[in-house]
Length: 500
Image (cartoon, rainbow, N blue to C red):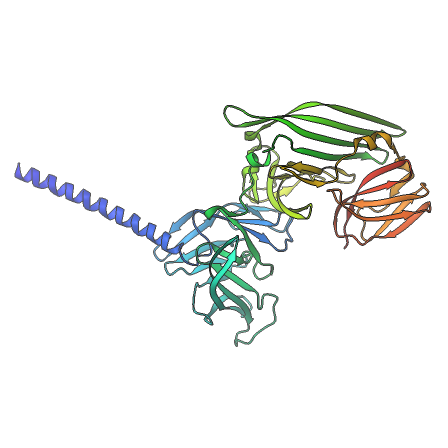
């Protein structure tokens, strides 16, 4: 019995010893991850940070990019951090969707807090959180025997996202193998690391040093600072009294088009028992003009309608920027961009529905497909564009929400009293246009006006001639509404400006 108890006690001791070792190992791993993610770490496990890319030469990507480390691998001396799957790539015939996105092909962090990012060229970027002003290190060795040095400029409190934190600022300088300075667009650019929130100003690691634009933090889930991911629940969150007005235009041939004006004012709001569906009743006015040469049909209605938004059907809107939704045959790409509305920049979530699986490693873009939906918080869908050879689009041109109005409201009385100009008497000869507006017209004494989709007038010209008219056009690249009108007639067309 004594031996049995001795064996039992030894077994219990051994089990406790093994359990203690496991707990100690887990504790050490946890400490490794925690220590590696504390002061001046560029990326932080468990948080999602959003960055605005100052320039963007990719298609069809947006301006906002995310860091969301969703897994780690702990090794003896370093931890590998894995950013979430994101769309990236410059080739529309092979758009990538993997972890090797703008944060680089690989991210590691040593136990000393040094982070390494592998570029698309397999060069290694080293970020050393040195806090001594004037200290330097080799930021990146390039294949052509040149390298970038990083030098600490300052370590001091700075304000961003309406908070203040200690920030390391360091600049870059390209040097040759003799450590002599070489000219480069990155020279003198300043990168910034926050003590508690990671990168404040950073780079496109995958395309370094080709992409010389910096990325600036716009939001983080840590303390819910700045921009937070747009989701369907907030996008379709309307209030009683909200008014939304839209202009819709679709053309299928030179002499065949359809134009539609819609006004909705929210009367009631309800939420389903399971919380999945938002239900509204709305006062609705519509004005529709359908032209199929030589006939023009006009229709006006004023009634009450029901708006139903099953949020589960819009779950793809909850995804981070540059993610995809492949629940259906047509793969949806989700992107975030900024939009100028009534003098303010608002974030819009774009859904591009023209992606498909080209191969196991590539996404392609469907030919002659431009279907893009844009959504904004509390405004629902703010635009849709499916234009190819002919314009097909919908724009939110006016809204009134929470006492704030934006755009020019639709004047239905005026629409009902104004005749439509015969489309064949006014033709845009170059659309898109690149600085010269070329018009063929038989309309004497007419006024041409160009407005932003919000309704703001940015250009107008009175013409008295008929025939071929050429007008200089100093307008920024974009999509506009062009209206031509005389005393009793008018028409509106979509105008695309693309200055080469």
